[in-house]
Image: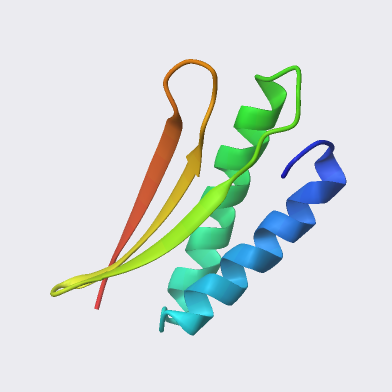
Length: 85
């Protein structure tokens, strides 16, 4: 959950842990952390309340994918980061 800017550190830590456990390269982990941080911060700034972020890592035959999603009262916000193997 991002309720204030310091909470972004927890989002970054969770992203790193998930990506490393899924077998992402360190370069991909770095790129994923930056992407998810930008996404989470943008959603936080656009909201007048805390935002919950769900992360998932998927393995595809040709690579890995990190997904971040924020469910909201309207359409949910989603972002996907594909990484080739």
